[in-house]
View 1: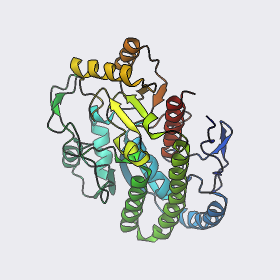
View 2: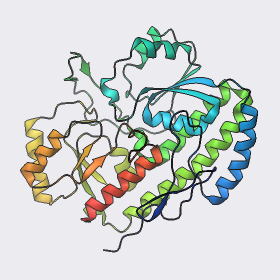
View 3: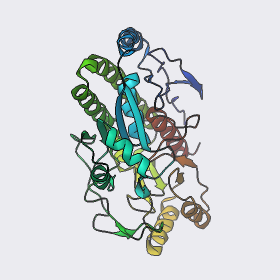
Length: 349
């Protein structure tokens, strides 16, 4: 089967050079504090670069806006829009699981000093209300999933212990919180970020709008690339086994069927019956795409691999980015990495 090169034709804008990987041009994302935006294509980038440079000059004498993002994926999105006008704190760093996060006193102090706190919502950060109260937060809490239509959580009502010694039950609620796995939803997130930053810093609003517009062009191109990458693969063949149910939005957007050993929480405990059923399904349907994730213990997937003879095809990024220098240090690179890994595995490459 001839495959299209994933990522072809996207060049870096806003003064960033493309990162060569696998014969394609790959745009890079700005880590927290870097203040650089991801490329939006040559024309968009050239126009935005001049506007951003002018806005940056005006920013030089302006104190950065203290903001907090709940976890690394949101942190990247906020930084893409906020640039050097924001001083960003990420509560949960790369390769870390938000489900088991326990805020430290120093983090509570930073939250208390912030003007804006950005969270995903949809029950993903169940600890957020307690943190805001304990930090005596007086700023604006911005829920970035506002305005999207969430998927229902198929495991709602199933409560489980964390398994990390915390001894309390955990339930995401009636909605699946992993909305960022659909690029179209992240475009809504970016608009919500720009609106909140404009409300908190009116003098920088043009700056934020310009960066949001440039980044939105990147996301539109990313969405098109993902669709093109899946196009040669028959829909019936698009079946993937993952550790936890974090990819339903991706599956809905790009017509991929994900089967998970765990529920929507990465720390939920799978049942023996559920695992046996999954193993049987893999054998009967001859599924060949099996993945570990960066925020889950790989032993369950490795066990399934041993029982089916199916070797894990690699690592997907679900609830967190990789560290800088890794394979998924930004949202754009995360979706590119995941899509390339998924399409290659499903196609048997």
